[in-house]
Image (cartoon, rainbow, N blue to C red; front, side, top):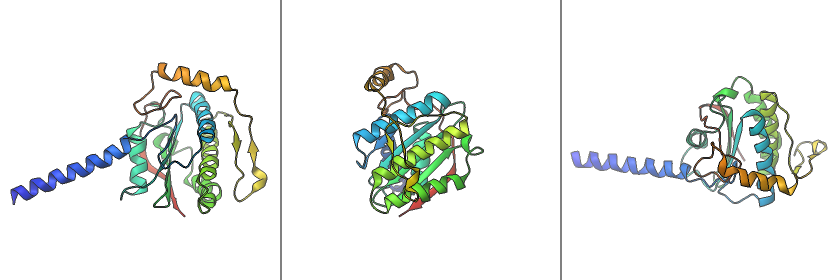
Length: 230
């Protein structure tokens, strides 16, 4: 009997380690870990520059993560683990956001840090989910859904933090209102070069990060946000 109990404990520890490894093994390029391979390099670059501008001006981080599968876990738990494990958001403000998309399960989650809970309403997140993200996802157009969702979230966080940011590249049309299309000029090539050169010297760079200085060291997430499926 005792032997069976020990085997059960060892098995549970092994499973927990596997789950933890899955979260810890994300391959971030800047603020984006596209494990499901649904984003082009141009979109990744443009979103990174926009999110870098947000981080510089407010300390806020938005981690954009795509996964092929949740491997049996809930989308909420995975989003929380990402936010906490990678310490998304500034250490002082805990103003991080995790934007998670799981392709196989057709589920997504927007998780906000505790420092944003009093500044951003869940209804604002659900509006972005319903109007800007899910209509694209239902057409299997994940790239545009992620792009416009990220731009909208960046604007929302910037407003909550009292700063103004600039989009890099072109923001796709809002699926429910094409007249809201907004375009921005792509940043000069030398801006990307400077970002790549400066990233290794940042004191906030963390394991697994691909540049742009890394995340801020916050990681306080209490479970506030919204989920969706398509």
